[in-house]
Image (cartoon, rainbow, N blue to C red; front, side, top):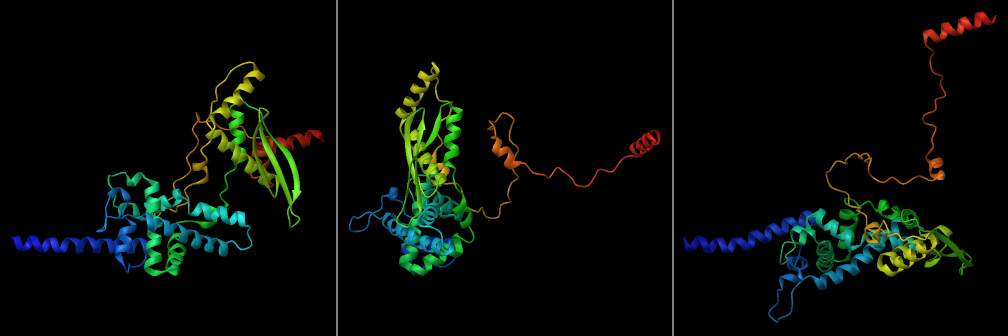
Length: 340
């Protein structure tokens, strides 16, 4: 009896390690050489484990390394994928791909969150913990198999199967429309003022605009077009509305003086973190659900005249005349006879 217990204790660690090997193979697409690196990548600091020298053992160092490797690898991929695109576009696309929210969703989709060792049971709902573990795994891959393995992992496993890189790149948040929506719902006056137009060292025009809400200065934006500069100014102003309650108070104080009535804001400024980190993860083996019709009680923005014109199509207009009924043919024949 006691012999069997000893044998079971010997087999248990081996069985668990074999299961970890299999799980990592499903996630990474290859078997690890040095399994201890991957164990450390999945060890959260909340466990409080220390080595024989008393130093903490967790995935923070590997997370630091993986973060740097991810920036290099994804930057390389984005640079080659979008030939001829400007530095700002490339930087923006890379930022979306390596954001903590994106990495957290990837960790959940791939099952990495189920392998994390942490104190407590909150890891399934902690995108930061999951995203950190993803970065730490990339650090482990780099130390275990090198830079080329990290490149293959991101290209073949992530950006081919799980993320649509083109969708990420061209999914733009219209900060201007969000700011206009906020101002319209709160009935405050908002405008863009052109401050200056200059040229850069290459002779390209550069525009600078500033947002004004109820005459109060919002943020400025500079870009190679008025649209770009307005987007940047709108984003900065939205961030200020989120972070500075006194700015909102000042806006509504001016509005109250203008309208001779006090009114509280009816809509909070949108959360930029959620806007800038949409879910780009391609869900595996899940049918796309049909778009649900909008409920009657939900707020529907009133389209502008230009939007109505843009949405106008000729689909309902047919070049082929409708076939006449028998009664219509007889009536026309009678009318023609009397006319003669």
